[in-house]
Structures are given as structure tokens and as C-alpha cells.
Length: 423
Ligand SMILES: *Cc1c(COP(=O)(O)O)cnc(C)c1O
Image (tube, rainbow, N blue to C red; front, side, top):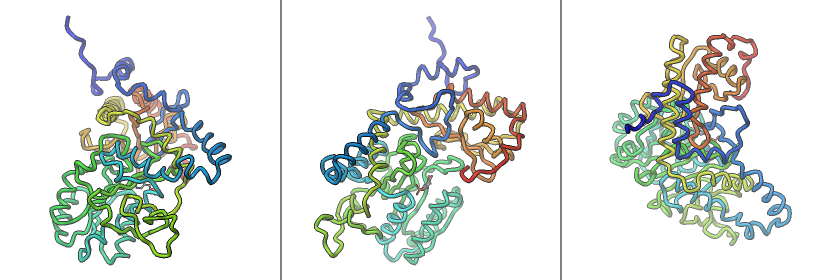
């Protein structure tokens, strides 16, 4: 008996083909861990992850019992005080670091500032930061400001020119600050190669993992990364504004000094000492008190990753994005969509962008039909494929709806041309 050919994403022609891929998906049971409304195709988990079903009940306990009854006693009794390190150790398993190299606090923006200044202080006499053009705005703003404070300059290189910029900076390179996956195009750097190049000229690296953590395999220590930051409300599903994670390689612990020393980063916070004595562990990255409710919601949300193999997550991410690109290009040829993401799966993250001059209105029309993606100015339709809860059949159905919107010219409705504050 000959085995049936195993379909892959690029061979899907029918809805049934997509369903076969879902049946073979080793992660298929994970979707049940999330609340996703019937009929909704959610392709924006790269911006705000879906709600894990366990979170509301956990929050009820935290609020009514730990806060309502336990009050101040819960800092010890309910383990609130140790939550940043505990949650950090959980995230560490997903990004290839040791448990004591990550903590969770503040926002990505604030943590980026802390590690940039810390890195520059570790490279006195060097005054160049290499970063990239077209990165997420906060990264550019924070990097510029941190450099100004430290008397350094930032070279914003085109992504294709980053390696050249590192070589050119040479012995003046203090650090490289890059986002592993570009928020618009999903272009992904080779973290190991860029890190090595930076180290070869004596610089440090600061990786932003906002569009990486929870979406595919990240191996901070295998890459020899120095510092990293990342959001927890995207692929890690921590909820709106959940605190960010920050990584420092163990070899640098006790060797760096971040610029927002607060009492939680003190070696002995409850000595209430007059002078700051930094902790020599990862807790030095903490400044003030954590947003405890968000942090505990995040901790609960992360159970959706329990026992997961990130290689399987990456394989599914690639299969979903591959399927989407193939279907859009096959079914919508001639409608003016142009792929704005890398064609090779290993060169991209878990979202796909297409450029279209009517991108904004088309995204609004899709949202009205229950397909939630987003728009990034000036002309990108962006679709995120969170491997834990997006199915191949969702990708298939989303493209069918897009075909319908284009053929019927539904996107021309005036309502879809009204600009909202959050796109
Ligand atoms: C989402 C994202 C941020 C968000 O930073 P916040 O401080 O959490 O608002 C920062 N950088 C990148 C690259 C992002 O994708």
C-alpha cells in the first residue's frame, strides 16, 4: 500500500486540505486553552495575544482572595514578591536562557532604556550604537535618548547595511540594538551571526524580542546574546499592558549598572538603606513595585506554553505563514497585493505583511467580516499567526473572505475609509 502524500502548506488547494494539516498539527489541542469567539478569525496575536481561559478565574482569586482578604500579607503568603523572578524563569524556558537571567517588570520601552545605558557603561570610551532604520518607533526614540545621555551617537542603518555599520564602527562600537523581527515586514535577523560580529569588534548586543518570544525558537544563550527585552502581551498572551521581560547574560550579572535604581533592585530592599547597593542578580533590573495584577495574569497565561516544544511552535508558524502567502498570491493575483515580507520562512517571524494602496480600507472591511488583522502605515496589511491558537483552516477562510471583499469591492464602503486612533 502506498502512503498518501502528506500535504504541506504550499499544496493546499481546498478547505479540506487545510483541515488535514490541522489534524496533523501536534499543537492542535492548545487552541482549546484560549477564548476565541465563534466565527472570529484572529490574526492579530502579534499585537495583543488572545485570552487564555485560565486567566479570569486566576484573576478572581488574586483580586478577591489574595488582595481582598490577604491584603499586605499576600506579598509573602501568596508569593507576590517573588513573582518577577518566577515569571522570568518561565519565560526563560521559551527563549533559551537560564532561569536566573530574566526578570519581568515595567514596559519594553523602559527596560530598553535600562539595558542600553547599562551596556554603554560597560564599554567606556566607545561611543557608537548601531541600530536600524524602520524599527518600532519606541526603539528609535529610546536609543536616541539613551545615547544622548551617555554622550554617544546612534547609527541607524538600513537593515541590509547593519553588518557594514558594525564593521565601520569597529573599536568605537559600544552596542548593537536590533529587533530580531521587524514589526512591519517580519524580516528576521540572524541573531547568532550579528551577535558574533558585534563581539568580534568588542561591542555588546541588545536584542528586542517583542515579535519573537512565544512565536518561534529563540536561543539567547546559544547565540551568546548579552541583553534582551521583550513584550509579554503579544505572542505570550499576558494581556494589555502586561509587564515586559528583560534578559542579562549571567556573565554580566553583577557587572552592570542600570540607570533607574529603585528599591526593588537593591541588594536588600527591606533594609531601607539610605544608599543604593545593587543586587548582584537579575533583580537589579527591577526599579519600583510591579504591576502585580498584570504580572499574575501573565503568569497564569504562560501556562498555555506548559511542556511545549518551541521547535513545533516554529514549524507551525512557518506552515501558517507559508500557507497564507501561497493562498494570497494564488487567489488574489491581479488585485494589487505585493508581498512585503521575506519569501523564505527562515527569514521571517510569525506575521506576514502585504502592501496595497487601499490597505487601510481593506483591513477595515476584513475586520467587519470577522477577520482581525491590522494596518501599518503607509500601506501595509499585517496578519499575525499565533501558532498556539490559529489553525490552517482559519488561514484558508481568511483568504476566501479577502477574495470576496476584493471581488465585490466591499472595501469601497465609506465607513471603511474613516481613520481610527488605533490602527
Ligand atoms: C510592541 C513593541 C514595543 C512596545 O513597547 P511598550 O513599551 O510595551 O509599549 C516595543 N518595541 C517593539 C519592537 C515592539 O514590537
